[in-house]
Length: 581
Image 1 (cartoon, rainbow, N blue to C red):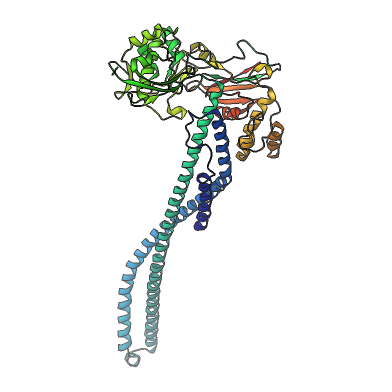
Image 2: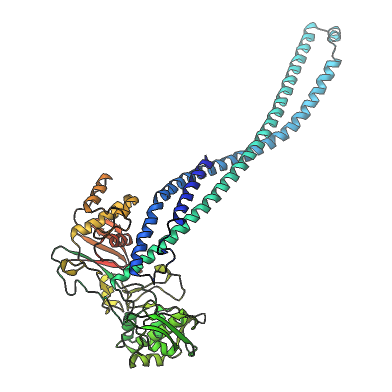
């Protein structure tokens, strides 16, 4: 049975791997291309291709899971049987050992009785017994006793003989059982080893594909124009509530994110807020990094800048590290001087780490750090000069001092957002006092002055170019989650209805989704009246979204919201809130 299951499983795995690794060669190598440099067109192409690959092996993967579950159940059953058999054999061994000792004694008794019986037979003379007896009845009584003793001895001999035969049979069966157990254990061990290897192969491939999909999803997020830099707030939030933009329908719902990616390292508007409360640049840096502020670092290093920035300028230039930092445009120069000093040290550290102390090139765009050919103004130059040779280090080496414009009240480690985990990154509540609710977040966050602190990202041409959603649109998103959770195979049909389906299949509209739910005995939403948010204000994550009394996991809601919501309307962070008008 196990071999049959393994054969089926092997075929399934081979099919999966064949589909994965022997697919048609693509015009763009979507598994190996760099998501940071891919064009928008190639990103769209790769998203579609990766989804196609996923849909191709989905049936085999589902069969794989089913067979794996069956095999695991079989392995568990065998393990139980082996355990039971082992206990039985140990008990049997103890019993045989005892019987072996008894048999030695039995053989001694048997030998003595056999000798005694032989002597009696040879020496006993019934005629002599009659002639010597005083009473005939006494003679017959003695003869009868001797017959009974002889019969008892015979039965004893037969019993001990049977015991010896049974003992030999038990020994033989024990040896066979031991051999069978050894074969069974070896077979289970081989099957488990094979299974672990094949599962690992598939998991490695799936992890690779998933990572690439996430990379391209992140690249598509860039279409919103979210700036990582506080200096160039391109695509800054056009808030739909401050002032209120009427979409032309009521009630209306919008989901507002706190901050923008990537929320690792220094929060630029947070640095501004900290400086405004009197913190100096060292205190600011210590708040955001687990690193040392080191003075006297080598100022003779040359930095090669290569590529094109967001302002249309091309570079292939070599600058001294201090001159390079003076060309950086990452923070508005009207920020407090201590915020600018903290920025200068972070930028210097980032460049030295990125280039390995000048041995590699660095790009001039926000994919690395934004520089212009023109030296930045006098305020920035003063901040650079005041921190000359100062670097953030860990173990004596410059760190990758990540930073972004607006964290939304919380910072995360690089590992928290799926990057390589670095010890100098840290989690923190970026506020001047505790945060226990959304009101505290608005009042106490150091980066609350950022124009992207609280925003409903995206818009559509109709409805006054806002991100407001109708009650039935929110209901549709909730229905999509219900259906996807009930039947994962439907997910490829649940993309947003106003764009081509990335899987190349038909996209189900809200009525089809309702019908699919009904066919599965699930009550769907027709409209929505009330939406509320539950959040963990210690870590800065939305935990639940409750829609008319039914609750959904906050991060699941975010994922399906971004999949289904119209146009480019998106939730861009782990912490978000609902607004109703």
